[in-house]
Length: 432
Image 1 (cartoon, rainbow, N blue to C red):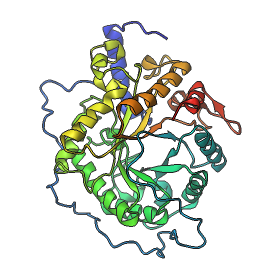
Image 2 (image 1 turned 180 degrees about the vertical axis):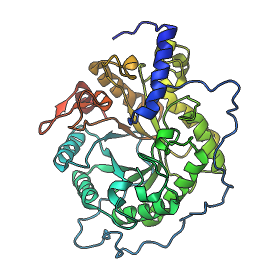
Image 3 (image 1 turned 30 degrees about the vertical axis):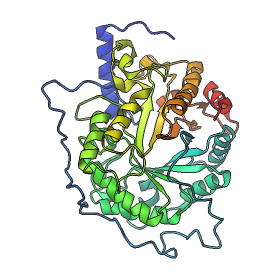
Image 4 (image 1 turned 180 degrees about the horizontal axis):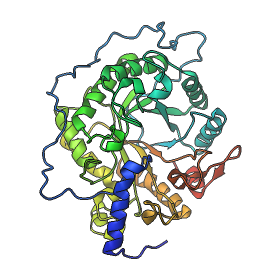
C-alpha cells in the first residue's frame, strides 16, 4: 500500500500514539523517535558512573569454576546426559540465521517450530528464559522442567540456542510489575551461574536483558546506561566462569531517537555505555546486541534519506541500516573486532487503523521481499562484523489478530499444521 504524505496533524497524532505505546504496550518493537528538546543537554550521560577497571559492589567476576556435581545442575559429563554438541567459536559466520520462537508452554508446538526453523535452513532459535519462571518461588528454588525440555529439543535438532534472560522474580525487589533490574546484582549473577552451569555446552549464547534504553524494560525508571553496564559485568563474569565457551550478548537496544523519561536514543545510550566501561567492553560483553526494524522503508535505504523524508518517519532510527550508526560507535572505541547480533528485526503488516504500527505496515508479500533483502544486504555489506540475525517471529499459536505481534510474524498462528505466510516460504527458499 502506498501512503500519502501525512499532514502535520496526522504526524502529531502518530507521534503521540507511538510515545504512549512505550508504557501501554508490552511489545518489543521500538517506539517512535523524537528529537531531544534543544535546551536539554544530551552530550553528558545521566547515569550511574563506574570508575574504569573498578568492579561493582556485587562483582561476581572470577569466581571459582563450578563443581559439576553441585545442585546447580547435572554436568555435561554425567553419563545420564546425552553427548554435548560440538563446541563452537565465539566468532560467528557473517551472517548467521535465526528466528524467535515461543517454546515455553507448549512443547508440541516447540518441536514443530524447531523442525520448521531447521527446514528453512536457519541454525539459531531465540527463546525467552524468564528468570521469574525458573526461580520465582524463592532464591535457590529452581524449576528446570521447561528449560530442560527446550534445551533437549533444540540440541536434538542441531539448532543453536540464543537465550534471553530478564523478567526478574518479585523476591529480588524493586516492585517492578514487568521487567526491571534486581535490587542486588548478585542475585542475578547467582541465577546465571546456576543456569550456565546446568546447560554448560548446550546453550550457545545468552542475551542479558532487553532494550535497556526504554523505561518499560528498566522498571519504569529513566534508562541508566551505567547501571546496565554494571549488570553486564556481573552477568558476564558469572556466565563465563560457569561456561567459558558461552557467548554473552548485551540486551538489544531499541532503535529510537526519543529523549524522554521513557526512552533514550540508542546511539547516545551505547556511547554512554562505552564511557561507563572506560572505553573497553572486555569483561562486559562478547557481542553487541541491537534491534532493527525497517518500518516503512526497504532495507537498503540510506538512513540519511529516511531522516530527510517525514513520510518514512523522519529519523535515522526508522531505517534498517540504523545498526550502522551503532557499529560506527563500536569502531570509534576500538571494538571493530567484535561482532553485532541483530536480536530482533522485521516488518509488520498490521492493518488496524487504530494501531500505532499501522502507519508503517507493509503487505505480506512486501514483508517477505524485505526480509530476504535484509539478509542479502547484510551478507554483502556487513560481513564480517554482523553475526546472528534473529527475525521476529514464528507465531505463538495463541495469538489473535488483536495482538500486535500477530502482524509481525512470518507464520499464522496454528496447530498442529504449520501455516506459513509468504515470508517463511521466501526465507526458506533464500540462498544462505
